Image (cartoon, rainbow over all chains, first blue to last red; front, top):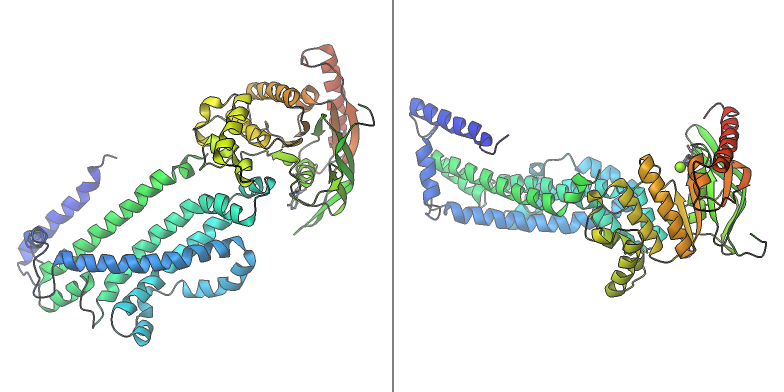
Length: 253
Length: 260
Ligand SMILES: Nc1ncnc2c1ncn2[C@@H]1O[C@H](COP(=O)(O)OP(=O)(O)O)[C@@H](O)[C@H]1O
Ligand SMILES: [Mg+2]
């Protein structure tokens, strides 16, 4: 499959959208493609006093990055511990299995109750959202490290720290990384959803909700497109690292 | 071999039982074995007779249910610095280069990088991989990977080398070549080797002493000394004669055990 074949459907989609918009002829329901594109040509222009597209994007990216980093700092070491020592996993598995299926948005009322409206509540939702995929992938990756790899280290009388550092972490690296990739995707969805809550004052979710209230559907769609583009770019970054840093995983037998 | 030789490995009344869902499996029963300094001993037996289990217990990766295993007069309670192991499956770390893999044992003992490199290159030269120091394991053929594994085993200069069917996954031609090379490494480095195999041909080609295990429960059936001069000629009459008699023994053992 050539790279440009990936573009066929999106192009058809845009054409269909524009035809539909022309037929409907109502910008409050479906604006023309050009009116959305126009917003991308002036990304720094203030949108009806709700801030510019670029500004709100950067706020969202900042929020998601912070929450994601906090989740990594918690979930990766914890996952290594739980994956390596069965006893910890036996203890915590029940709790993890129950908490894991709860969608991040279900935590909204609690996070508002605990942290009030604002930054901390949003961060909490992001952290909750991406901790579990990172944790579960890390545990799984550590548990699947080949026994003969660990035993090889033991033959040379490696201590526990060396086994962790030189065998388990590099061997589970690809699994941990794919957990980060999934986790970031969820974090990105969570931040936009959290920003749609009443009381927020910035971010892409905020921009979408507020301009919707003003009937500016072209801004709503521009915001959605920005979410999609940023999501894809981040995912490409994760894939790029996966391909280069963890090349061995796909090539080893 | 005389009695005053140093005994590196001594197995006394070793029994190993595994409890599984289907009940208890007696993998090894009352195994007795001695390996003298500089010997090349082959552990021969059909698949499932407990060769890997014995290999792992001597290596300190597993403990016998009863009986004792000693290396250099001390009871084994974990991997000994005097021995090293080469596994049946490829066990190189795929995220490390060949040189980084070979240096593993030195790295674990905190030998500085510079000293490590000298040692690593020496072993790589010995196994003929000096041009592949910076390659990754997945860039090597099966034979080259096992050569790297042998280099990794040799780098800490252990007295005893335990090898579990290291050439089992290789094609016949590569396998013969590796056997030849292993013998010349053995002669050059004066190691004591315990080599596990299920191939009679391989055992007759390599060993000073062949320990034949019976299947289930595994126990020593016979110890067979071979004093054919090396390099051995697989097509010679003597070789064929020994091989034939061993094959016969193994076949009888297998026939006496229906559930294998
Ligand atoms: N960890 C284990 N748990 C249960 N049974 C085992 C285990 N390891 C080996 N066995 C059993 O012990 C017997 C001997 O196995 P093994 O030592 O691998 O034989 P070989 O290397 O000669 O093929 C087999 O019947 C095998 O199923
Ligand atoms: Mg085996």
